[in-house]
Length: 436
Image 1: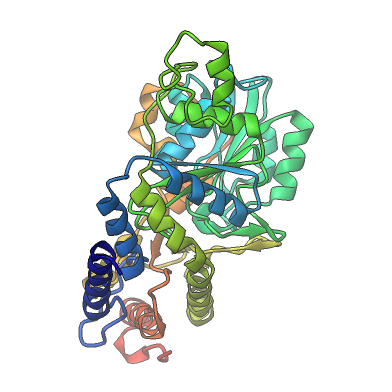
Image 2: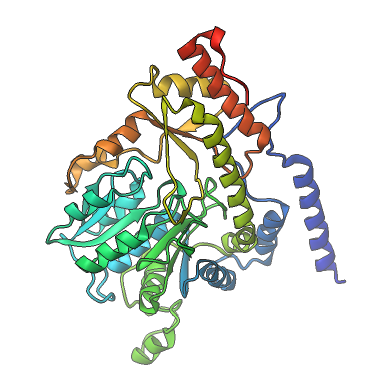
C-alpha cells in the first residue's frame, strides 16, 4: 500500500469514527425534538466528498456524467442532466423548451398551465422566458392539479402543462397525458418533492418531455445542493447540456459535429447558443452516487410513518383532512400535510404553536397558493377559474416531519402531542384522548 492510500484510509476511518460517534438523528425521549428534516448523509458520503476534494478534480466531469447515467437508469429514462439545484433543473427545462434548438419551441406570449399550489421556481422560469403562467386550482383530496379545472383552463395560446407531484403524491398521469395528447401540449414534470415516486409502476418524471428533481438538504436524498432533469429525448438533452454551461458545445455528446462545422474556432470555446452556468460539482455527484442506492429504503420509512399518522390521527378526522394517495400512485411523502376542516374550533396558528413549543417543527404546505404572493402583481399571468382549494390549503394547511429519521418514538410523540392539543383545546383536560 502506498503512502497516499494509507493516508486516505486513515481519513476514511476518522470520518467514520466521527460520524458513528456524533451522527445520531434518532428521537431522544429525554430531549424530544422532531425537526422537519434530518441529514440523509453518513460517513461514506462525506468521505466521498473529501476524497473528491483531495483529488483536486472538482469541476463538473466524469463523476457528474456517471451519476447522470446512474439516475437515468433509476428512473427508467434514456438521459439525464445534472445541475446545481432543483430550481436550476426547472429553469433548464423551460429554457430548453423555449429555445430555437427545440422543435416547435415555446415563444413569448405562449401560455403554460401551472398549479396554484406550487413553489416559486416552478413558475419563475416561465416568466423569465416571457411565457404566461396560467394558474389552476388543486384538487383538495390529492392536492395535485384539479383535472376538471385543468381542461377548462386550456385556451388557444396554451402550449404546455407544468405540473407538480405535490408532496410526493403522483398526479393522475393517465388523465394528464391523454389531455396533453388531445390538445398537443408539452408536459414538464416538477418532481422536486417526489423523488422515487411512481405512477402505475413507472417513475414520475418519465411521462412528459422532461422531469426535474432536487437533491437539496430537505429532500429525499441530498448532494448538499443539486438537481437533475430526466428525458427520453436526445436532442432536448443536448440542448440542456449546452444551456447549462455558457452555451458552448463542449459538454454535448455531439461536440465533434460543431468542431467540424466551425474549424476556425478553438474547439474548447465554441458558443452555439445562449446559456447559464448551472453546473454541479464532482463533489455533488460523488455524494449522489452513494446516496441513490439508499433511496428506496429511505422512502419505505417515510411511507411507514405516513401510515402510522393516518391510522392514529384518524380519530381526529372531525377536524382534520388528510392528503389521499393517488390511485395507481406510490406516494413518497415529502412531509405530512394536514388541512383543518371548517368546523375546527382552533386555527393553524393555535395547533402549530402548540406543536412548536413542544419542539415539533411545522411549516406551510409548499408555498400555499402562489397566485396570492405579491410578486405576481408585477408580471403577466392568467388565473383560470376559482382557486378555492389552493386558498384553503394556504389558510388552513400545515405540515410536519415524515422523513427517513422519524422513528417509532418520534411518531408516537407527534401523535401524543396532537392528542394532547385536542384534549386541552377542544375537549378540556378531563377528556384526554387515549394514548397511542
